Amino acid sequence: MPLAPRPATALPANGAPTLAIRPLSSFLGMFSLDIGIDLGTANTLVTVRGRGIVINEPSVVAIDRSSKRILAIGEEAKRMVGRTPSTIVAVRPLRDGVISDFTVTERMLQHFIRSVHERFGLGIPKPRVMVGIPFGATEVEKRAVHDAAMAAGARAAYLIEEPMAAAIGCALPVMEAPGSMVVDIGGGTTEVAVLALGGIVVATSVRAAGDAMDHALMAYARQVHRLLIGERTAEAIKASAGSAFPLDEEASVQLRGRDLATGLPKSVDVSTVEIRDALSPVTAEIVRAVRGTIETTPPELVADLMLHGIALAGGGALLRGLDRRLATETRFPVYVAEDPLRAVVRGCGEALEEAATLQKVQAVVSSRRAPR
Image 1 (cartoon, rainbow, N blue to C red):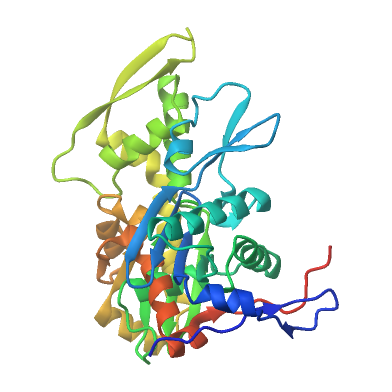
Image 2: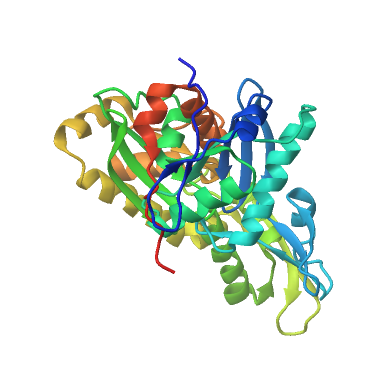
């Protein structure tokens, strides 16, 4: 059953919640679209109720150093990474899944919310917003995301932990008694969770994910081949030649960058075996996180997982052979969810549509403000 619009809760300085529904905000809400947002370290995805996923852009903002003016957001800003003059800097306002720059994140959210409403010809946006947050986020981090969404124009902001959103987006039966397990491999963190009856029973979060893989490739090129490559090059190599398990047909790719000895352009041929070895420390940490979570899972739920398997979500799930590596190491069935990149944002949208699900799975933000 669709959830009727609910008033936002204002939190005054004394910490006591008061009803803050205003006639204008309520009226504008009638012309707004409910929005689910996967606020990721690498990419931000936005889904609109009844319209599907309408935005999938990098979480990058280009800023003028002198005036602090925002010049570009999303794909346009990402194209500037590593190519900007000294007066412009391209920043990622989220690190390891949490906000590192509140002001820039607020502006980025505002840009995406307005873009959605402009695309569909609506006026001043006052939507309800569901935002995915990392498991185990602190009260300060939750408050930062909530406040950023409200400041960006939401009339009500809800938070949902990303493993729960990913599980809902993977169509796992999270509201039922049998256990489900999801491994969400994002840009900044990998989150492993066992879920049942609408809650997270056991979970682990490690900072071994897409960004760590890129940095591992950059370090390998520097140490082994004395070659300096950028993040965009490392990301492209990871996508085209990265793997976590021996491939049926190994191949080779060219690494292009700057020779550390001469400072001149240089290219070297590297095999997919080398790339896999370079990524091995990161994939090994993901395996340890999954095994550690299984070891602390109640036996009855372990029996359920042996039947239903482990779902992989997030961009890191696309790393070739990762499902086979995890299946070998854990002896559980492991599969990559359909369209894993969009699992979290799908879950955000679905949770926002169902009243019972929303009440059960949303992460609660403390009504007390964090001390300054």
